[in-house]
Length: 361
Ligand SMILES: Nc1ncnc2c1ncn2[C@@H]1O[C@H](COP(=O)(O)OP(=O)(O)OP(=O)(O)O)[C@@H](O)[C@H]1O
Ligand SMILES: [Mg+2]
Image (cartoon, rainbow, N blue to C red; front, side, top):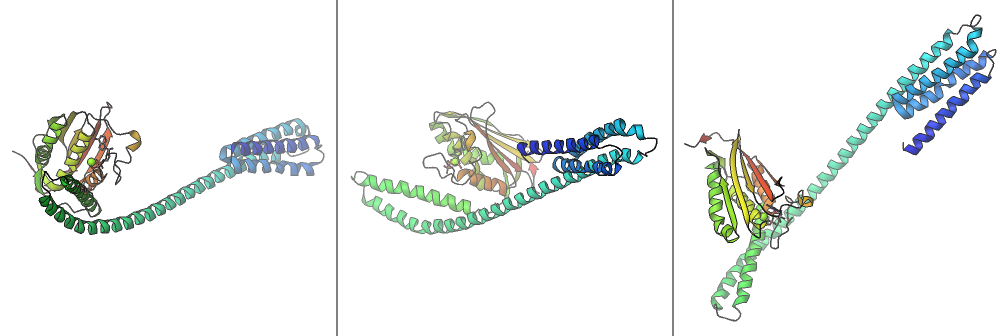
């Protein structure tokens, strides 16, 4: 009930108590047959308030009615006590309290159960909606993967044809730049189609013993030229002793390359990229921290969504693929703004879960 409704109910209950009490006080005690009825009339406001306001409301109104009734007994009946037995009437006060408390408690219980049932119903609806949505997305995904796959073959043909054309149009030819545009756009399409297929048909990791520090070193070898060109300084702190464990190093290389490139892209004017690995019990934690623009708080939830990108030429599949690979290794990945608000920090945690685990010597 809303506040306005509550106030109206309270006024109704109070008026009801006032009328019943007035009947008690104006009816002479010489007419006990009326008083027998009036005594019981108090149950109406008591039950009402217990129903609407629960245990507290029921008990409070029962106590109020009991007090008014007690006053009436003391003022008007007590002088007749020598020839009328008042025990029943005094006991009625106790009954008010019992009925008020009991009805209120039951009403509270009913309300709680109703709320629980409503909550369960909402959850059911929600999970049904989610199931429908994921079915829909799966269907769209399958369709899009089919289309991407079909695009890849003619794209191969076009690429071959452009290579032949490139031979025909030498560097000095006035139309050579069109061949270069074709080549650039074909590469872009190949990347989009390839990443989309990687995402929609993820490969199970092909596990083999390796060291995470080796994977990171090879990623840095690959990207060092690019990093230098973009004025990005590297700060590297790799854990010792380095642990060997089962991983798909090709897939993890893809993860760290995307994280390093994301860090670099966030610092167009240059900055510092620090890479740290450390062992925590049965897990390895890899942190890649930049001093870039950070993530807009509104985007924090979205950056792992497929196709979310703020970059021209980006596919927005980098992070979803990273998450897929890390989760298939049994790990987790998070990206947050740094607490000092100076860029973003990506954290990958991988479990060391292989039988062949051994410490480096
Ligand atoms: N270190 C970071 N600092 C700031 N923003 C980031 C960082 N990493 C990711 N983001 C944001 O998350 C978005 C999604 O990243 P994701 O790697 O999935 O795709 P992308 O980098 O835009 O495209 P692609 O990886 O295909 O080149 C980015 O466009 C960027 O806005
Ligand atoms: Mg990326």
